[in-house]
Each structure stands twice: as structure tokens, then as C-alpha cells.
Image (cartoon, rainbow, N blue to C red; front, side, top):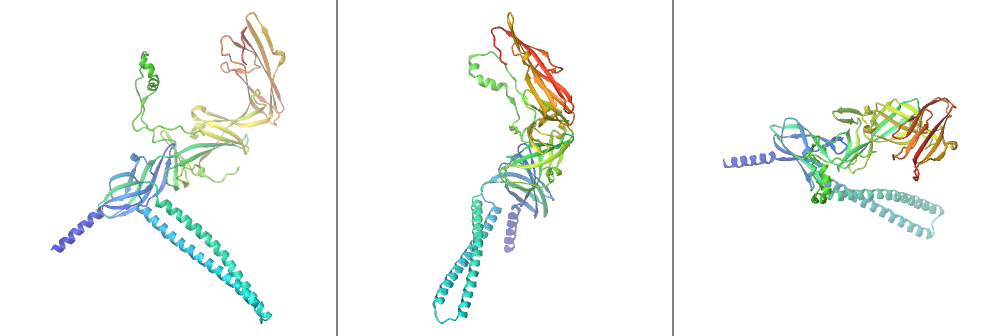
Length: 535
């Protein structure tokens, strides 16, 4: 009876040990959603557990995880008791297993180097021995000519064979030494590991179960920003808009063939509306004057929720192209955010190196016109206008512009400033000649009783040397006064439209091939005697 009791107690003890089994889960990173700041990562795993309570350890995770963002989803009939994220500064079982495997490989590599060095030494000794024997045999008398020939053939063949084997052995030895050094470096790096993140989950199984696990969390140090390409083949073709993303992640783990999503949101910034604090005003006193800076700061304060995170400013940013990720990207609009789902696997290193990812391509219709500023440039500029471009879900950024396969320059895209129409230049066209010259006959300066009156006139000439009709917008200007005592009056605008606030004068023209048009700009300026003006 006592023996049975002992076995019963030991059995209960073993059950208690098993009830708190710790299992290092072999998981795989399968998906990342990169926001303008930070990224949500999803790992998947499958484990087979007996009945009881178990601690599941997800190791080798980033050390920059938002602790409150960790979630574990399970399928398979178990109860999740707790989830905890922490930093592990020690080697875990998986790391130790990897180090032991590296040590075994290093021992094999060291043995291979030793074998090759022994072979090389043996061949070298045999070569020296043959050379010495050849010299001794050559000095002996009594050998026939046939015997000498056979001996020479033997030494020649054998020495050649040894030299070839020495060359092969030297190459093998070089490769073996490089492999040994590489394994040694890897072992040294893993022997002093960097801290890694761990998620420990306590689960309870009423019966044996196979669990499908999905771990998700939000990590720092991942971001993306947009870059665009605007390509125009000719003025009778649409604009090809290529939407690209520069993606960076410094989570410390490599993303290998994952599903990548790019979102315009930022989950680390509070979505709660800020509340304004009272903005007090009072008389100035000595104390307030001394605290002037603090008062200025308090005027601009507002209450943010405690979990709000300060948002950093977003950085602004052959012809037959191969298939890219843009051909597989889907766009999902949800509320105030847009998410791009890249349809092919993507790999990104965890050391912060930036990498381009194609998002999508669109062909949009555009109007093409010419614009000229003869005062500043002797050629006209081909301009493209894209309407309703806000539907493309573009973020502020820079765009590289290409026309007829040639790089033209860059332009800025900002939906908040551009409005419904996007206008950008496709470069200069030297076949539209623009001249701007002063008309001396109308340049005068008169002294009145109390004032001085000056007149100036300019002639603008535009000639279309293209073989087709063109629509052209011309811009010039007259001065704008910054003083009440200085007056500016337009005398002749040749049909141009004047903006009084800016002084810009515009003409809208249509020119036939070979046609030349001239416009005149004539104005006068009046200011008090004894004053000098700056043009």
C-alpha cells in the first residue's frame, strides 16, 4: 500500500510539472502593414498540446514593440489565460540550439582544413622526393637510352599529376578556410546575442488539441513615404502615373517573403479630438514680462489624451517596363485611411535599408497646352493638366517627370494645395520662340510740379515654328506698388488680363504653324519728387 502511495504521489508530481510545460513556438512572420510611422506585424504558428496548462513562448521578436498592442488569436479549443511581452537578454533554447549546430559545423570545417593542409604537405614532399631522385638517377651510368626515356616519361607524368593536384588542393583549401572564417564570425556573433523580444502566452487545454496561432503587434521604426513618376509619351497620349513607396524597417528582424500592406494611417497617433484649454488674457505686469516665453507657450497649448504620440512630419519627397508589384496591388479605402495591398511577396532587411516597392499605375487623360514667360525664358513650356486627380489617393510627395522617354525634372504633389487640377511642366520647346524687349520710344521720364512720372513699354514676340496649331498662355507683368505715394497705371495691355494684386498680365492665344504674334505692355509710374524708386 505504501508503495502504491509513493507511485501515486510521483505521478501527481509529474502531472504538475507537465501542467506548466514551456514550449518555444516556431513561428513565421507572414504579413506586415506599414503605416506612415510604425508597422503591424502578424506571425503564424501551429502547435500540438496535451491537456493541461502551458506557457507558449514566441521568441526572436523585435525589442521595439508597443506593449499594449500585443494580441494572440487562437483556434483549436483552448483557453487563453494571459499574454505578456518582455525583453529577453539571455539566450533562449532556439538560440542555444543554433549555436550548437554552428559549433558542429565549425568543427567539421576545421577538420576539412586540416585534411587539405595534410594533403598539400604530402604532395609537396612527394614532389621534392621525385625531383631529388630524378637528379640522382640522371647521374648514374650504365642506363640505356630506352631506360632513360622511360624514366623521364615517368617523372614528367608524375610531376605533372602532382602539380595539378596541388593546384586543386590549394583552391579547395582557400574555400575551406573562407567557410571556416565565416562560421567562426557567425558563432562569435551568436555567442553574444542582442536582446530580443518575447511574448509569453499561458493557455489551458481541457484535452489534447492542435492550435492555430496568430500573433499580431505594433512595432516602432518602420515607415514609408511616396514617390511618383509622371510619364508622357506624346501630346496625344494620356499621362501614366506610377505610384511608388520607399519602405524602411528597423525592427531588428528580416521580413522574408511576406505579404506587405501599406497604409496612409498612423495608429500611434490618438484618434481622439483634442480639447482646448482656456486662453487667458490679462494686463502686463513685471512678473508676466519675466515669464514672457512661458506665457507665449501657454497660449498655444491644448490637451491631448495621455496615449497620444507626437507625429513626425512626412518627408516629401526603359520604356517597356517589366511586370512589377504595381500590377498586383489592390486598394482598400476604409474611413479616413487608404490601404494598398501588394499582391506579390516582398522581402525587407531589418537594418533600416530603404527599398522601393511599386504600388500601382494609372493612365489618366490630360490636356496639353503651352505656356510662355518671355521676360524669363526665350522658349515656351509644354504644360500638362490632369483633372480630378484626387481620386488617385495620392499623398504629398515629389514626382519625377518624363516626356518622350527623357527625364524632364521634378514637381511637387500636394493634394491639400493643388486642388482638383494638377499642372506640371513637360519641359521647354525651342520651336516656340519668345522674345521680350524694351521699346525705347516709349521710355520717358517727366518732372512735374511735385512728382516724377516715368513710362516704360515692352514688346513681346511669339513665333510658332511647329508644324501644328498650338494653344499658348503668355505671362508678363507690370510693377505693383507697396507705397500709397507710388502709383502704377497700365496704359496698354494689348488685350491681356491684369491681376491688380500680383501685377501679372496673361494672354490666351492660338497660333497656326509659322504664325508670329506681337503684344505690347505699356505702363507709367508716378512718385514724389526727391524720392528714388527701386524697380
